[in-house]
Image (tube, rainbow, N blue to C red; front, side, top):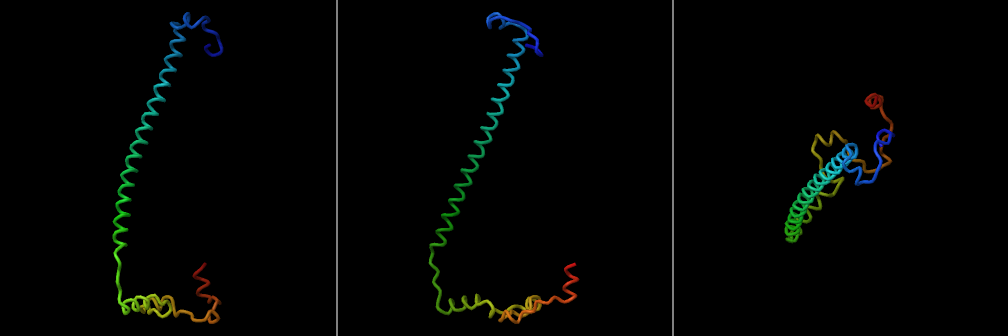
Length: 127
């Protein structure tokens, strides 16, 4: 059929050399070849990605192993070193440099001391 019209009738043996039938076969073969080519390209890309991923996984495993080896070494600190380290994490007692202290103000020790009223200067900074 060509645009709804019957162009030839018969068995396959009778039509296999018909020009319209040969044209249809050619179109079908080109489509088939195009699909096979696209599949081959996709398979190549997948293979490359798989190889890259495998190399990345090996590298990650090596890094993890090296990290575990470093972590497995025991760090021995004296009581004085432990106390100094703990003091650095005391929060409100930790001293701030002057610029930081001026920037954030004094740390509140009591939540009831907090002032929540905004000044007009603060209000205009927002808008």
